[in-house]
Image 1 (cartoon, one colour):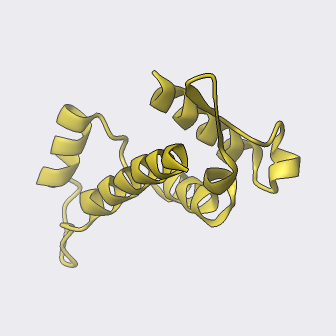
Image 2: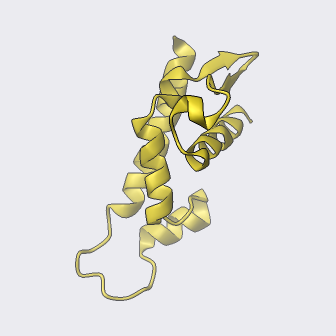
Length: 106
């Protein structure tokens, strides 16, 4: 149970960082220059630039049960599903989720 909350916490922090990085965009933003949050996120935190593509992947993962079904084995998180088809997500989302688990386990 505790490990499930750890994964949820890490996922929540990641989602918060994603939302925070876009929350300061002005509706009248007329130039292509990055705003303060984008510069900070990319240079200091190392977050990628938010695009329609990676936002779509993040939302697909959030709307799936990948997080809830992740298991804690031998001191690390592992994906319950062995392939994207059984997880009912795209291959890209499945691979990105597995990359996230690898990063969390480091």
